[in-house]
Length: 124
Image (tube, rainbow, N blue to C red; front, side, top):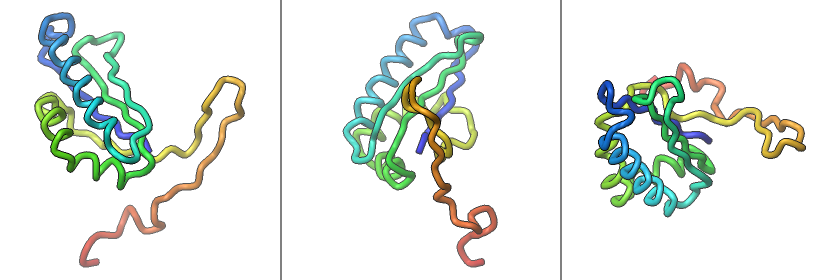
């Protein structure tokens, strides 16, 4: 499962001390996330064409591991300040096709979504 959080820093801050502080905060958040069960990897990336756009991408054993990690005190302390810059967008994605090395053939994975996932809700 991939967890992707997009961030938009204030205009023009992509090459300033604020960007450095943001990256340092994201590094601390990745360290905290990395201590959680089910964590596989994480990256902070900045858009090549717009230095004010950033993304934090983490890979997890599944959505439960990601959600449990978000409940950890150390994760809350390090990730919450960054969320002031988060873009409201879907952030949890199941991997359906993957290729783990250039020589490997892509592998397909079955969906873990329930057949009624798009329409089911509590009380229905």
